[in-house]
Length: 449
Image (cartoon, rainbow, N blue to C red):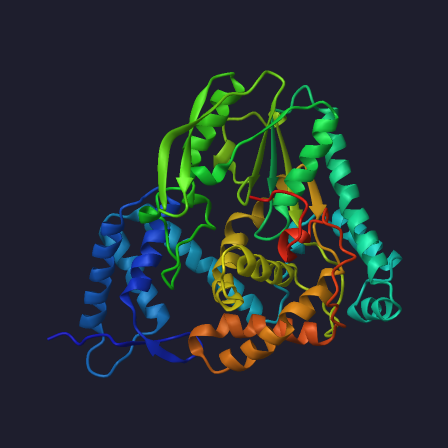
C-alpha cells in the first residue's frame, strides 16, 4: 500500500505540511496562462501527481519541493498538456533565476527595465533638492522643511503629467486610446484623473473603459499557492473581449460591455452600452495596459502608453537604493486597510505573489511605453514611518522562525530597518488633497472609485 505524503521539504531545508491544493493551484495557474480554465482537469492532474509521489516516496522518505515540481512536469507531459507544461517550466525557471540572483547578493530592483535617462533625471532632481539619502531627508525634516519637500515633490510629479499631456496633444489627430499602466499602488488612479484634466482642458473628450468589468468569474480565477484568488495576472481578464470591444469602438460601433460584481464574483455580460465619437479618446487605467494581447489589433499610432512607477532615487541606511516595491507595499497596506478593511499583515503576506506577477507580466513591458511618470515622493517615507513602523517591528518578530513566511519576514526586516532610520511625521496637513499620495493615505479631492 502506498504511503500517504504528509510533509514536504522546502528549499530552505524546513519541513512543512504537504497540501495538495498548492499543486492544483500551480497547475491551474499554468493552464490559465495558455488559455485553459477547467479547474476539474487541474484537480485530476494534481491527484495523479500525489499518487505518483505516494508510490515513489515509501517509508519515511519526504519529497522536496523540487521533487514535486519534477513530477508535475512529468504528469502534465504524459497527459498531453504540453503547452501547460511549458508555461509551468518557464515559470519554474524564472523563479530559479531570481533565487540565484538573491543567493549571489545581486540587486532585485527594477531599474534594468527603466530607461537610464529617466532614472538619471530623477536622481538629478534628488541631488538638487538634497534628498538623495535618508540622512539628508532627515536633516530637512529636522529643519522644519517637510512642507517644502511636499511642495517640491508634488511639483515634479505634476510636471511629469503635464509633459505626458503635451505629447498626447501633439498627436491628437492619431491617438484613440490612452493607457495608464503600472504595478500595484504606483498611483495609476490619480494619474489617470490628472491626465484626463489636462486633456479636457485641451478640448479632448475622454471616455473611460473600466477593464475591471472584464474579469472572468471568480469560479475560474487562478489562485496563488495559499488559495487566494489572483487578480494580478493579465489572464484574470478576458483579454480577447477587451481587444474586440476596443477595435469596434474605434471603428464607431456601439458595444455592450460587461459588468463585474466584486461582491458576488460574477461577470454580467452585455450590461453597459458604450460608443465613442470620431474625436473621442478612450482612457484605460490598468495594471496590464502594456500587455500586448489587451490591444493587439489596435495600430501602434492610435495608442499612447504611459507607465508610472515609484522611481525613488534615495539611498537607505545600508547605502543601497530604496526598493520601489517597498514603497508600493506600504502604500497598498494603508489603502487596503482603509478601503477594504484588510489588516496590513494580510497585504504583507500576499505581496510575494503581487511582486511575482509584476516581474512576469508588467515590468518586462516597460520599454514599450511612450512616457514614464515618476510616482514616488520622498515625503511619503516619514508619513509611512509614523503609520506603519510599529507594525513592521512586530512582524519581524512574528515571522522570524516561520518557514512558511520567509518572504514576509525578509520584506518586513528590510522595511523595518529603513523606517528605523527615518524621522516620522504624524501631521499630514501640508499634503494637499490633490496630491496623488492621498490616494493611499486618504483625504483625496478626487473620486477614486
